[in-house]
Structures are given as C-alpha cells and as structure tokens.
Image 1 (cartoon, rainbow, N blue to C red):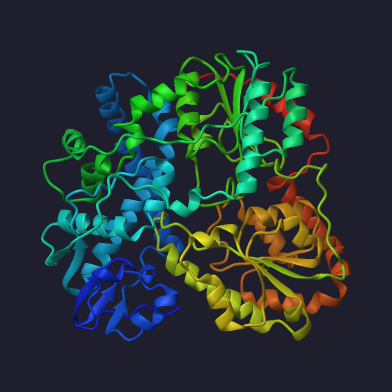
Image 2 (image 1 turned 45 degrees about the horizontal axis):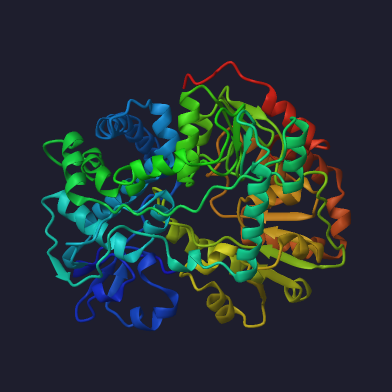
Length: 605
C-alpha cells in the first residue's frame, strides 16, 4: 500500500474515480483515494505525475467523533424526512414505520455523505486544485431504484463522479473549475448486471423451491406466524414451524422489479421543503441532497410498491413476524412488516452476523431499535429488546469436522463497499499487506499446505485479488469461494480468520482449532466486548499482528490438538462463545420458547 503524500505546493487536477475518461495525463494530478487506482491498470497510473490524497477518518478517536456526529445528524433529520414523505404520500405513518422501511438506507446515506464531504474538504485544505472533470448530468439521476442498488451505487465510478461534483458545487467558495464531458444516459442507478445472472441449475432449484412454497401456501392460515430468512438451517426451520403448530411454509419474497424512475423536478421541490437558505454545514448539505439520493421505491415508486405488497399471499394477521435477514434491503418485506406492526403485530428479528453486540460503530442497529424482540447469539447490551438465544446458523445437528493431519486454511475478507464514515479502501489495502506479511513468516511446511479461501463477494470487486496473490507467490493454492466452507475445514487442521468475522464465531462454537489476526488492535470493539476478546488474545487465539499469528502457527503446527486442548485455550473459548456464539442442544424448542413468549412492548416504539 502506497502511503499518500502530503501537500507539495503543486497545482493538481482532482481525480475522483477510476474512470479514466475523467483523468488528465498532461498535467499533475491528485487521486482522491486509492479506489481510483485499479490494480490491473497500474501500468497506466504508475507513469502519471500524480499523488494520492490522505485517507479520511482513520483511527479510533476520529471514527468515534464521526460516528457520534453521524448519529446526531440522523436523529435530527429523520423526523423531517418522515414528515415530507407523509405529506407527499398522503399518509400518517409514524417514525417506527419509516425506520423499518428506509432506516437502513437513511443511516448509510448519512455515513456516506459525511465521508464524501469531509474527504473533499480535507483535500481542499491540503492541496491546490486546478480543476476536475465530470460527466454531463442532464439525464443522470443519483437516486437508485431501491436500497440494494444504493449499496452498489455508493462504490460506482459514474455515481461518485456526479456526487463529488455536486459536493464541490455546494461547498461554495471553492476554486475548482469543472470540465464537463459527455456521459452515458441513465435514469436511476441499478445494481451491476452480473449480480442478476443466476446459473441454470440454481434457477431450476429456485423454481422448484417456489413451487413447493406455493403448494404449502395453500394450507397456510391467515394467523400463522410468519417466518422468513430466519438464518436457521432449513430443516430446523421446518421443525420449528411444526413445533408451533402450523404447516411449514417456505416463504420467499418476490423478485423486486420497480418500473418508476426518478423525477428530478419532484425531488428538487421536496428538497426545498427541508433545505436551509444557505449551505454552510454538513447538515445543510445532507438536507439539500436527501431527496436527490432517496431510492425511487420510496418516492415515485411507493404506490407501485404498496400495490405489490397488497398482493402478497402472506398471512393477513400473523401471530408474529420473524426474520434474521429481510430487514435491510427487501423492500416488499419491509413495507409489509411496517404495515403489520402498525396494526399491532409483534415484530421479532434475529442476529445476522458477528458485529452485533461487539462492534463499536454498529450500536444500536436499525433492526435492534425497531423490533419488539431482538434475538442475539448469547449477549445482552443495554436494550430491553435484547433476548439471548444461540448461534442460529449452526446448531448441534450440524457438526463441523476438521482433520488433525490436514492443511492450513486462511479465510479472507473482500474489499468493502464504500459506505463507512472512514476510508475503508485504504484500510483494506493495509489488510492485504498484512495477509502477505503473515504468509512470509510461515515456515516451509505450513506455507506449502496453505489454502487461501477468498470471500465469495470478491468476484464483484475490482481489487484483483487473484492477480495480487499470483504476483506475490504464483505457487499459492487459492480457492475462489465456490466450495462450501465446511468441506474446506474438514480437510484442515487449523483455520485462520484474517478479520473479526461470523466465520470466527462458527469455528469457535464448533470447537475447530482456530487462529485469528487483524489490524488496529481492539479499537473497533465496544468497551463491553473488549474483556471477552482479551480472553482470546491472552489464550493465543487472537493475535494483533500478522507476524504474531504466523509465529503461533509455526509453534503449534505439529501438535495442533495438544495446543487446542489446553485448559487456558478451552476455557477462553467457552467463555467467549457463551456470550457471542452460544450453542444450543435443542434449537427448535429453544426457538419456540423465544418466539412465542411475548413482550410487553407491543408497537409503542
């Protein structure tokens, strides 16, 4: 990772994205961030007279301050947005309704805008700019069609190019001329086409799954509990529904296809209802751009979305609603649920991944705040909704195995979406450097038996991970993420998690020999979680440098089972898992009790 250079007194052309049509090769330039420099195009950018601007928002103190500012801005602005939406749609929905429907997108919007505005401001404070290049935007809309498309838009070159120019314009007093070049016509950002391409075999299986669900749906009752995307293994979910006295339903949410496109004139008029008279602060910019970025399904397409929801064959008066996955980007599920909650239905969500209860900057999540009950994997942390449960994804019925004489498996993260207040791309570059440091310190035999398991999402990024690994060591064994992780673990004696992950909880809960390492110490953790992680550090399971982790691998390679069986290691593992990855011998009956024991909170949130 190249460390960005500081101000050098040179007038430079600002480059905001990796789209080379906006670059200038005949003058000094400054890349706004590492996301501009794609690895397989290094033969182009390495020869330029260009530097990289300093990354924004790194370090715990800065992240803490920005997180606090973002949440304060969110709380101040959200009621005003709800009011405008209610007036426009002729509704009287409360704050809880709108948080269920668009709360996740709104939080990402605030974090995104804080990052983009502060990144530009920081660059302007430390560098002199000769100008920048932008695409003509006469027909281009920053509004995506839905919240899932928004996540992908936030990392898209064309989208960010348009956003950065808007920010430069709104900041005022900025001397940065904008050269406009022809751009592609687009009426609302959609997700990449590759994400919708499904192999034939999988399409057939999904079709069969839907048909089975339709047949079972004929036996559904209007007051059945509604369980969808529970995170439980399918067999356990079926047993659960039988246990609560209903015919098992394999509910799925229909494919979301929205036809309404952003109406820029409408959005401009709505922005004027909450925008201030001047643009002097980040809050002013947030207000002025909220309706320019709001997904079309919440505005122009809301009536269409409502009509689709009314046609869903789901229970009319469900006993309760439970999901561990549908609460973020499933627009039809969210709207259907919000309507049911307003009529008094109990809404229960379950933990989806490892960061709940531990991560410093995910507190409190939208799904925790808007539900009557939030089922954790063992922990509680200050909310009455928190209800300790167990790790849903893996139950005692699913036992993972490992091979005491097998290889070494290292499980990788993929380049993150650009949706945090800080520069996640720069941090990921440091993460990649750490992976190479780890491998360099491995002794010959474990290195020869190493398999690098890439994240399945890596194929949708531009980090060129395989090329980077091949340039580093062409003899490395790389698995692209296609094989089931359990099969890879079954052939391994030791699993390495290179980041704080759900997979780490899974292998620890299954008592699979595990080592973990990451950067920045315990800075990303809540204070309440640090003592539990420190237990794993003290036991030699978690390492805070790649060199330390590699040294441990070399030390225990020939006696993995003896090391893993040590009382200090097992005691730390059990204590940690009891809080964050609890196992359950009777998951069906435990889940039945948790779901059918009603709270006193009703729909008062």
